[in-house]
Amino acid sequence: MRIAFVYDTVYPDTKGGVEKRVWELARRLVGRGHEVHLLVPRGWEGPSRIERDGVVLRGVCRNRPLYTRRGRRAVLPALAYALGAARLLRGERFDLVDCQIPAHPAAVGAWLVARRRSHSKLVITWHEAWDRAWVEEMGFLGHVGKWVEALVVRLPATHMAVSRHTADTLAYLGRQADAIILAGVDVPSKARPVEAPSSDILFVGRLVPTKNVGLLIEAVAALVARGIRPRVLVIGDGPSRTTWEGQVDRQGLSERIEFAGDLESSEQVMAAMESTRLLALPSIREGFGLVALEAAALGVPVVTVDHPRNAARHLVVDDVTGLCVPPTTGAFADALQAILVDDHLRDRLGAEAERRALEVTWDSTVDDTEAIYRIGVA
Image (cartoon, rainbow, N blue to C red; front, side):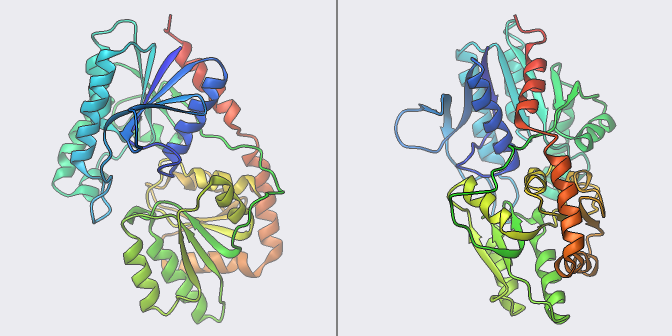
């Protein structure tokens, strides 16, 4: 098959769960004999068409900042990307086009092109469905976003969800997912040839408001007040970094919490994960929570929050594979403390997390995805 993935960022230039999933699918599908193109903003010098590991990257528009200063997704770059992707799809033939949501405008453009091409199958992969959260995230513009999402929900295509949480939200919006296909993990190597800083508590993710790192900072302040002085490492970057670094300074936690920015390679991230005692995931919005699955595969317990928009809470079984608590400073601090001071609890949670995580691999994710792709493709 000749396959096009439509999403406005690419791994590892941008490190996130959607990007990692698309990249793992793309390169593994290439290994199975498919021709795979990623339609992305052009974030490199030189020709608009390049290859990485056999995957063809197609620069369809100029690379622009994805987020506003407030940490919200910018609208104009999304529209420019949608136009560029539609222009390329109109000029070339693909057997299948897989649009990743939240790239809603690009999905509408891909459908407008696909409806004129009976040979091209359209798949829409839902990483998140926001519904009423649109207005909370974007203010007045959120009403437009909510309308566009409702339009995409109704497009005649194969709709896949990456989690039961997202599938349930889609069902509420009137669309039954044709398939639910989880992300996977590689069976990890426990002997990594790279060095990484060790920590007691690790956070990995894009530094945007919904990642809720402020809650982690408040919880660490509470631990310090109790006489517990953990070493905290924050890996990732984004528009909220300056805000949270300022919060750390104001609370006198600069010696406790280090912002490391983006690390150069996924191997370094995984080595840092292997060198921590627990992963903190205070996010109030996760479409899946791949980092929680990756930590679990290394036997690292996860502390996350029981928030209705946090799909990672379905990956963390409370007091079985990690701790899932209300999104309050006290509850989050208590959960962190419980694992930090009780090695038996940490080992028990980590062992069960690892056992369950390794039942889900990237190969099984690709098997299931490929099977969906082949249905209706000549």
